[in-house]
Length: 499
Image 1: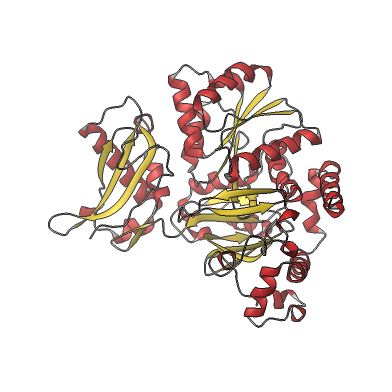
Image 2: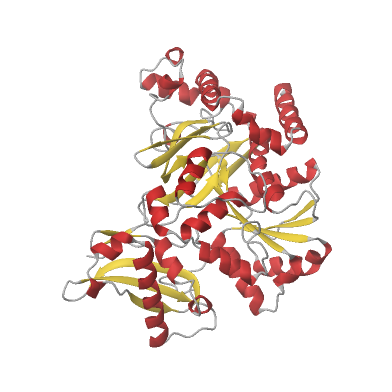
């Protein structure tokens, strides 16, 4: 028996149950995040064998790291120079894997599985991110709620982790019941039909493309989503505000800033931040003001915009990419995840918006003064065309206009190709929705819509690409085309240019 584990669990659970969300989210205003991360460094340097070895290999004496300025000089860690160089046991405190109670798997960008160990105390920290959404967005503290887990179940991170966090909310007193059909759409429809009417609202939790596909298939099968006061909690992919509005409309949404929210999560450390009503309000303003978005973010695409608690996950940036520090089963210090993005303080965000004449107030409510982090995702998911960076996010908006959104699933493959005369052209292969047939008229309408959105949203495209080359070449493929849209694998929106 490990009595210290019992005490650690008891304290974490007691804190989660007894400290209000409001109190927890105000703690960063009265405590120093820099001091907290320095304290984490000293503890990890003393207890984690892998990090001790990492410091020694870099000729760093932990005792020399006394100030935040010292901490900022520490080398970054990543999968290659840290996680893959040490055993799973040595990445844990005291080299004891048994100090964690669960192991999850992520496939990563290479497809090679990576194991992540964690303890209940780590999940309870992350459960606060779920609590923010369920309380501040969905009012689930006062409404009976059926939480339908649509993430893949099994060893993969998303499903079981999310299930646990929702059950912790129920243990705190939220009137939430969890059901776990996973990514089985037949089961999702069945549980919503048979159980949804017993609750004041139903929350679908899953990856955005999967949820849209499930919602659309449900409509085709006669599902009346609007009967169940559907809310959406998502993770794993950037989506446009047009997408949010479209999906919200299909489930009968009433208040776009409160009916859905997305998590910024990673298998490495759980949830790092989450959308809030005010972050969604701000993002929607920026979506309709591309010039403001370009000035704020420095790119012609709209990132995911979330708020985060700097006492829970401490973000830093270098060369336009994010890295963070945070406690976990495998504690991470200055961990570089290669996500392109940045951080903005709450005050700086309001000051910037004020300059553009926008005050993001919703229904007179007060909002937590948490900093913002914005995330574009990995920078290699772009296509270079006449020197302009073409982002999948720009194309997505073009597919969400007018009648076009009824013809397509939202999946596509973007490439910069050459014709027989070695002239460049922008190729976009688009997946048709089930039951929809392709036609030249549809191809032309989609190409024109994508072009107009690229000109509106992407100043590089508008200025770098000669007019004769601005119209993309659209090819339509049937649902689940085996070459471009195979079932059962994670979709890639870009491909390397062919020589």
